Image 1: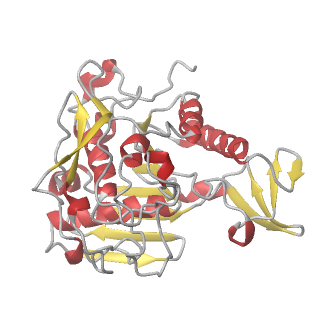
Image 2 (image 1 turned 30 degrees about the horizontal axis):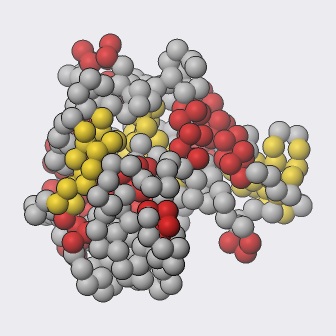
Length: 358
């Protein structure tokens, strides 16, 4: 393990919390704010009447894919749960404070639609804090930007299903495990939040590539977890080569789970997220951790630059109730992959806020 690998906060950096925002993000070792007292990513969900943190119907940025109440979800209990970490209280999200801290900065989410899920949640949280603030937006298809003009804060989403490149060549579309030309767009952001996994198992007509290039080898297919690991290692090298901690801070959004099979949480195989009304009343998930979690942590250990892991998997596994299911505006038959907004992604952003201010 490299001496500078970071999956949690290093105690030597605690003295710098009063410095600029970049320096205020402590190095990660298992994602703990204070290893002796608080584990942000292990805990339980508790009912809280003061939740949700905002009214989703008043948010102009909420996409129809995630806007469950607007598209007919009849219950609201899923909005009333607060994540309670072991040994501490999670700071309540303060959008005005975050906008002040981020004044003049560019914040970029890079990844698939789970990154978009968190991006939309953050926009709604910030809008709720300054509902009368002036905003502007642009959308090029690949890059979406909303700027909170009063603070000159730009929040962006860059679509990248795999982080590494897909290039159209004579043989067809090639997924290149060792190429990140798209990374040129990411340079210049002050905060980067990365994510990939959801598309790696995809097969059939939805698969957006025809071949995989692994070094000098062109393959029709390969073990998807192995491919994911190689691509993430390429991203890790990109971080070490391109990120300067004095100017840019990096988060990695952990693996976001799906809930299509009830047997995973102790129900029947025929059960899914549809009709679920409450989170699991547990501190562990019956089916155990996801294999991809270990891949992410192993790769992050190789990075010498500070990267904060938002280790959201366990707390999200417990939220079988928080998916849109059929209550979305794109007529998915049953979406047990994405999350309602307002809802669980607000907690992901609350955890990111805690990392920034603690």
